[in-house]
Length: 174
Ligand SMILES: [Zn+2]
Ligand SMILES: [Zn+2]
Image (cartoon, rainbow, N blue to C red):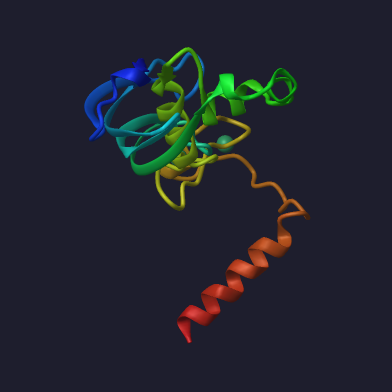
């Protein structure tokens, strides 16, 4: 979705639109509802607004589908890429280029919206806060009850964590 900078009137431009956003490759897009206001200050463009979307994720422990609602506000500044000299331009990565610059009188807001959504999505989503995950041996969903597999000894790297958890429990009880 590209917007023409020269189309932005003196008092700013308000747009309400639905944009497909693909959070993970191949997962299929979710629809973002976007309210965006664009203002021009000379060559500089300020884009601000809100994004609402329900992202389809998978629980990082049991892989169940999780619908994760996101509502986020943004405010970004854009300058014309043409204002940079060639050397400066080469120092910028593509990512920075589509974040802070527009070129040829056009601003691609799809990149901006996707970035905002990605920033709001947890790295390790969970279906419920204390999801038990799936058994690594038999694949059973442990939220539905224990499986018959012999429980492994606690990974020594995780031992301090379970100790910590117990400590917190004790504190909660007293
Ligand atoms: Zn889960
Ligand atoms: Zn099992």
